[in-house]
Length: 66
Image (cartoon, rainbow, N blue to C red; front, side, top):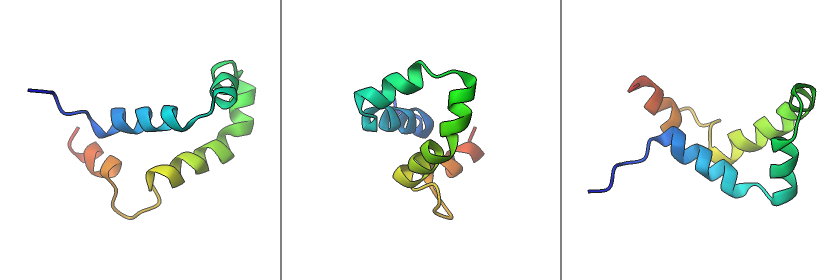
């Protein structure tokens, strides 16, 4: 039987799959200062793509089960 994937692991896989190569390389090679500058836009994109603005979402629900 295949083990169920945790919602957080699934979310990480989804985020990585959505990144184009230049963006992935930029994040991979970013300094702490670079990450600080990109966190607002990148964070908003992640929240929107995963539906984290929703009042109830799978990641919030999974945190309560940890």
